[in-house]
Length: 400
Image 1: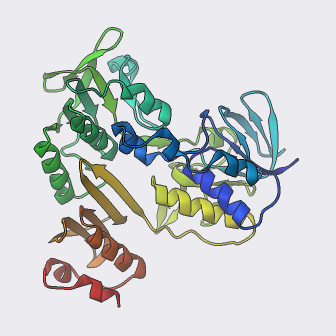
Image 2: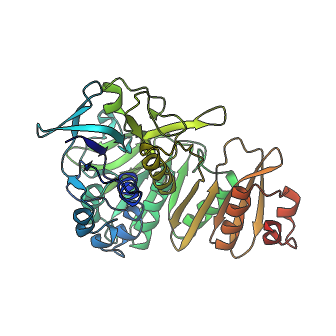
Image 3: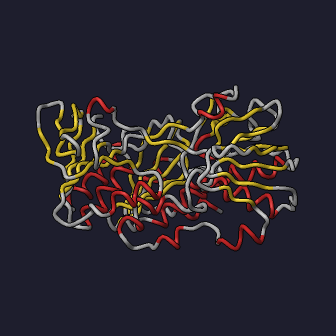
């Protein structure tokens, strides 16, 4: 029986399935996921779950009974081997086929890995993306162990923070001139760097990795300046790539992910995409966002559009990262910023402007600044760099 099929079983897929049923769709609905467990939260994996502060049961997005009660067929531990757009059929790894009236690709993104030629295939070299990844490394997060983190983005920094809290020796290596180079301003990076230094993380910036050493398992890292760093294990956090291989093989247009229109529809009228794998029109180009907020919002919009809503997607970006006992909350997109203004409050906040217009805020342990900044950005309220820089200016009053 033909119906809606969702490929992928992460946050976007779970949100889309729930929205479809919430909007009254009562046709066949299937979710196909490659992992053996139902959809779960991923952000806590490198934070509370890795620390041992969150049980695996709390990661689950929907209870087992919810899927049954809402007549959603979960095909877990199963991958899709091919899409036949002409016949509107997908073939599964177990040989089964599913017909679809509409197909939603919520396939997410895949971590970049180090090449095998420089030691990327050694044992005890990990990436952080799914439950199996974290379960595989958790036993090594023991006080006194030596961890080398490759990559100074949020995932690498979160892993470093967890490791130090658990008493490990941690060295983080970033080949670029500074940590968070692609995603945050120098001011935010400096605040995060200082936080890590205070907690004993050694951060090496502007130095590349030549190779990982070891025979069967990793024993260290050789850097481009000749230094050797001993390691009991390595966590690699050098970014992700959109998982669009299935779409490409089916002839679906891709551009830094599965290219969709403003409504979330791909180059095939019956195939849609949402979440980390999808790039959508934004400003004069295309944008792909890797965040929980985008996964939820875009998936729910696509669900409505599958049922005929014909709504265009307007992202309302927000992100967060836990670093030790500090929480970094981010609102907006800092693309093309030309000025950053620092402001003291409950914690620290950094306000990004482009052509004198507020476009993003990084708030470190300052929930009030985050909420005010988010509302100012989403409401298009005028605020100047001078007002932000003035500690006597009540920014909340500008919301009125």
